[in-house]
Picture 1 (tube, rainbow, N blue to C red):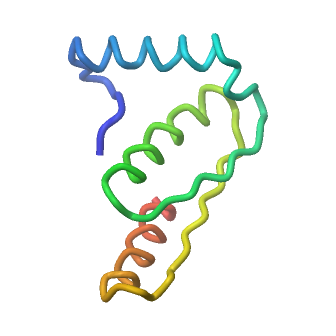
Picture 2 (spheres, one colour; picture 1 turned 90 degrees about the vertical axis):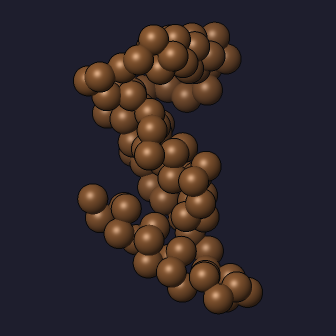
Amino acid sequence: MFCWGGNDTWFFKILKKKIFKFIKDYKIFNKYDKILLGVSGGKDSISLLNCMSKLSHIYELELSVAHLNHGMREEAGRDEDFVRQICKN
C-alpha cells in the first residue's frame, strides 16, 4: 500500500501537495463529511482506502467501507476476507 508516511520521497511529497490542492480547489469534501468508499480488494481500491484513511484523520471524516461479494469469481470470498481484515486494522 502507498500513500504517505514519515519517509516521504520527493514524488510522494509532490503527490500529497497536489491531492490537498485538488480537494481544496474542487471542494471534494468538507470537514466532518460522511464518506462511503467502495472497495473491491484490488490494489487500486486498497491504495485509495489507505489514502482516504489518512485524509479522514486530517479532515475528521466519517469513513465507511462497502464491499460487494458478487460470488462470480473463485477469488470473491478471499477478496471479501481481505477487505474485512484491512478494515479491522
